[in-house]
Image 1 (tube, rainbow, N blue to C red):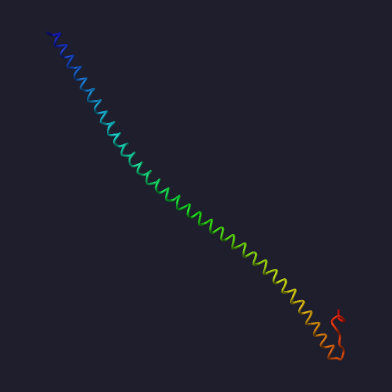
Image 2: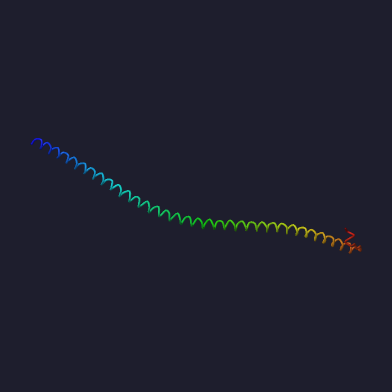
Length: 132
């Protein structure tokens, strides 16, 4: 009987130890489950953030593309305007040069006509070829 009591006591000790091990395993599983839930929640938030950021990035890329295109149009318009302006400046310089030359020629002709008029009044008439 003593042996049966020892066996019963040993069996009771094993049972208690087995129950404690199962309780420890359940506690560890519950803690792991809690961590899984937290990480799944964080994962959901991150996926939502990624979706929001992806949408925002798409909108910014579209906006940038439009603005870059508009800037390129500005650059083209400025370049064409500057080229046209430079051609106007060159034409103006050429026109000023031609006008100065013509004005000088007209001045010479007027001076020549004035000299002829003076010579005529004094009784002497000279042709243009005489003055040359």
